[in-house]
Length: 139
Image 1 (tube, rainbow, N blue to C red):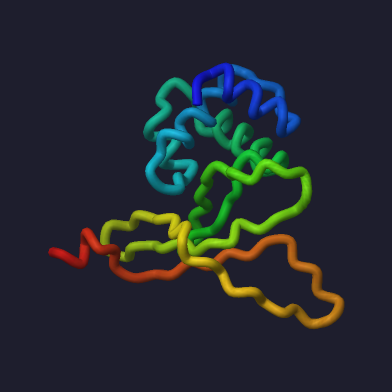
Image 2 (spheres, rainbow, N blue to C red):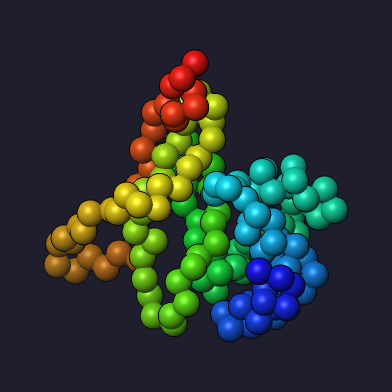
């Protein structure tokens, strides 16, 4: 996605495109796995931590990204590819490798439907499986 497409996508989601927002979006777009605030901070030396965090918070509020906790207290972010205006779930698993400490998005593994008791209204579901990734398992 080029800058013009990023700008159009952000505006479609109700987010005004600024330089910082385009930079954060582009970095998330290039990422091969979900990224933490620290990951982004390490890769984006031209932006400070609070600027990146403000962009991520805004993106989460406007469904540009979805955020999930990786099972050890670290929040990771990945772009949301859903284009509708209705609420939806990000129905896939995430995997945290306890050896290399990387978090992976398992797009093809769906989260099972969970029947909630009457009166409970969930707004998000997050499943993180912990273990050893294939790369670390070869060692």
